[in-house]
Each structure stands twice: as C-alpha cells, then as structure tokens.
Length: 454
Ligand SMILES: Cc1cc2nc3c(=O)[nH]c(=O)nc-3n(C[C@H](O)[C@H](O)[C@H](O)COP(=O)(O)O)c2cc1C
Image (tube, rainbow, N blue to C red; front, side, top):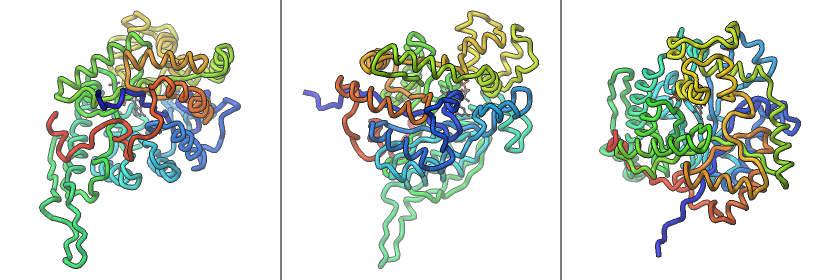
C-alpha cells in the first residue's frame, strides 16, 4: 500500500492591506468591518484562517492609488476604490504574532525595489515566522507607480520580465550565500560561523550589480516560497522558471484546463517537476444553508459595486485613461499593444470575439471591479464542494479565495465549506508540519538548487 498523502486542496486567502477586499464594493457591504487600519482586523482573519487550516493568507500590493482614470485621484478617494494601501509586510508580522502554522505571503515588485533589499526583507520575515513566508513576484503595472518612484513612465511589458528574471537570480543568489550548517556558535573557541560556508555573490549583470555577502542565514524552509501571477506568454515563461505557486485568473473551467496543462507543461520543459509548481485560481464563494439564500447573498454583494469601480480599476491595470474616450470606440492595434496587462487584454479579446475591443468590451468582458470578475461558486456547502471538487480534479491544485465582505467570507467558508471538503477527504484535518513548504507539500530546497533549471 502506498503511504503517499492523497492529493488535497490548497486554500489561500486573497488579502489586501486596504479599505476593501479586491472587490471594491466590499467596503460598502454592511457586514464588513471598518478597522482595516488596526492590527486586530488582520489578526481576527488570521485566526479564522488558521482555524480553517488554510495554507496561506496572501496580500496583493500596488505602489500607487488608482488615479489613471481622469488623471486624478478624486473619484478614487471619494468612492474608496482601494484608496488606502498599507505596506503588506508589517501586516504579515501582525498576523504571524497570533498564528503558528498559517503561511503568510506578500507581494513585492521587481520593478521598483532593489534585489538586495527584497532578499533581506523576505529572508528576515521567513526567520521571524519560523519558515512560513512567501513572496509574490510582480512587475507592477502603471505610470502612477513609476512616478511615485522617481521615474516618468512604467517600463514596457517584456522588458519588465527580463528585469524580473535577473532580479530573481540576484535574490536567489543571496539566499544561497549561507550554506546550511554555516553557524557554529562556539563561544569558548570564538568560532561564530564557518567562513568557508558563507559566500559573496559578486553579481554584475544587465540590470543589477550586487556584491554581498548577504547578512541573513537560511531559514527552516530554506528560503521563502515563490509565488507569481502573470499569465501572458512571457509571464508564463517566467512562472515556469521560478514559481512554486501560481496565482491564476481563470474565466471558466474550460480555459482553466488549458492554462493548467500549458503551465505544467512549461514547468516540465524548464526541467522542473510539474508537481512542484502548484496552480490556484481566484474564486469567490457564496455559501448558505439553502441555494436561494446563497444566490441572494451573491446578488446583494453585487449590488454594492458601482460603475466607477470598474472604470478606475481597468484604467489602473491597463495604464490607459478611458475617461474621455467614447464608450464604443474600438482600440487600435497600437493602443492594444501598449497596454500594461497583456493577459487581461487577451482575455477580453477572446471573450468578446473582437480583435479591437472598446471600453464597453473591457468593462463587460473582464468584469473587473464587479461581482462578475472571475468565477463564483454559489450554493449550499454540498453544492460549493461539488464545484470545487470538479475544478480540483481537472484544472487546479487549490484556490485563492476572494472576499466580498470582511471577515464574513472567510468565516462562512471555514464554518460551512471546510467540513464538507474534509468529509470528502479533499482537505486536511491538521497541518502536516511546521513550515509553509511542509503545508504546501514542497521540498525544502538546498542552496543553489534553482540553478539546475535556469
Ligand atoms: C491574479 C493576479 C493577481 C495579480 N496581483 C498583482 C499585484 O498584487 N500587484 C501587481 O503589481 N500586479 C499584480 N498582478 C499583475 C501581474 O504581476 C502582471 O504584472 C500582469 O499580470 C501583467 O503580466 P501578464 O501580462 O504576464 O499577465 C496580478 C495578476 C494576476 C493575474
């Protein structure tokens, strides 16, 4: 008999250190709590997630307020369209203080920070949480972010990924600097650590120079887990090389199956074990004692969204100002080539069936900023578990749960859906170990392991 643990669903909570969840209408929901500037808000959710044996709470990040629409922040501030954005890394530590096993992930941009800084920040977080940290690698999206960091414009899409590749080489290189067992701690012999086991990186490449030696030894899980979310061709190539957990946006099951097969194949082609790259699409869940009640919850949450949310958030990620553009005017090929988020653009082209979509097509086919953005599993605990099971068995390794009221979405999921998944053997009944890698079923990497598949 095989002693292998059966494949089980990984659950990630999609968190934002801001005034709403990634669904802007959530802040208008009467059941949402308003203390998002207090540690207790995040700690309350952390306890719920650990109680529900979630793999991880994961925070997105942006380095500017959404203010591309109308080239102004007025609407964004007035309507609370992600107008508050705290740095997610200190928030992780607030959550770490009240949990023991929950994984903690934060987004950090390769376009606006230095690799040495990011390597040290995340390595320190990983030590302070005893090996529970993940870094979501993003390349950022728009000119507002560039202007906050002393630049005039955001870099072109593929160039950002080229930079990100080298960024990862530097970060991983620093994380390799201290071999396991480098620390001796012999007080009487005055031997703190073995200099033969601590190395300088001496990196000098196309975008970065960084010398070392790095000042943070390896953690219990070796180094932080790498997450990634880009879905264009270039984004997938990057994920295939580096990502251990990919945060995906599947519009539906059929497209999900294709993307899942594509990414697993790309990871294999890059020399990696496809099982070591997990894929988790974002989903919303509306669960209740009856299907009718669950549908009512969905409709109600949907009614919290406003048209301005969609416009502001689309302009933010495409890096294009829609405000004075006729609603039905098709974008030219040149305009489409220049948008920042290629995979979102391609999804709108695919779903609308138009080579040159208009603002209306972007609003209607992306669903961005509305309750229709991405799939929603709606129904009783049994119905929701049925849908999750179907996806898990055909196109994913887990899910990133998007909240529509905070902390209600997470509480309801843990109370109603988790027991049903456990009953089916699809979900753990206890954390298997100590670190995030233990929880995700990922091996602890040896120093320099990543060089095998680069
Ligand atoms: C599900 C998902 C979540 C993302 N989260 C963030 C984020 O928190 N911060 C950010 O700057 N970009 C985020 N992005 C943008 C990606 O990092 C990337 O810049 C963008 O998708 C463009 O790359 P692509 O064309 O390869 O998809 C996200 C993308 C996806 C699909």
